[in-house]
Image (cartoon, rainbow, N blue to C red; front, side, top):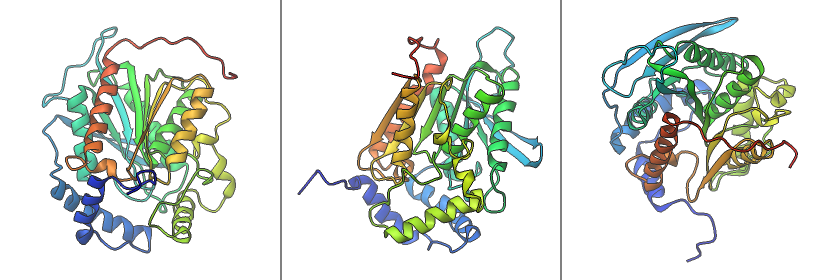
Length: 340
């Protein structure tokens, strides 16, 4: 047996086989795909034993100028909401996180995402603020980016009221949510320059030109590229120039200087692996501290197979350890110029 050719991890492959009989057929429209995926979410979670832990939570709906309202949910790491933090006192770190789903599916009410937010808040001892954004194609760019920016602004402005610390903010996201997290960071740098300690990106989609995409094993290339074009067009519309807008494709930004330290996770068998790793290189060249971990034998979704795939559980522990560093004073690294 050859171990040089990339293969799906045996545990992830076993989960795929276990779930396959219950997985819905892919829909032809975004609405069908959304409905099918939403129906499958609790089935998958029940099969893997994924469910919510009891924590204090609170929901808010925010007005977004020129766009639909944005909804968010706050998760505290305990069953009781802490008191507001006095000025100058160190409150809890805050992670603002955006879910993934190709811009067309998922949300903060999904069993898997809700359980993930709860576990990360509890295990890392941080406040998690999960932001909701509108689905494509019903709403297109820049709606989602502006909604996520509004969620982040609200989190920063209300940090002490929530028992948090505006000096211990992090922004994260997975897949399409990683795109919106990176866009929010660029918006923050360009608009407000609030202090952010960390960007946490998991299998992120960062360049909608498709320059770094590679088709996944087992998917015919024609089918793959048709799906990729569909998702991009649903989100951006038919104006191809938008694919190079840095708030749509953060990897296309002219400069990455001034962005916060990054931790990025990519998967060996993921079509988006090139996006995350190119972004890591771009940040490094700009003098931004960055760590990028490639998960061997994993695909785009297998990191979600908590309690069934060892790598998935390890990634959770690794992310928790990373988030726990927000409780400490940041490490000060030498300033490195953009031109090395």
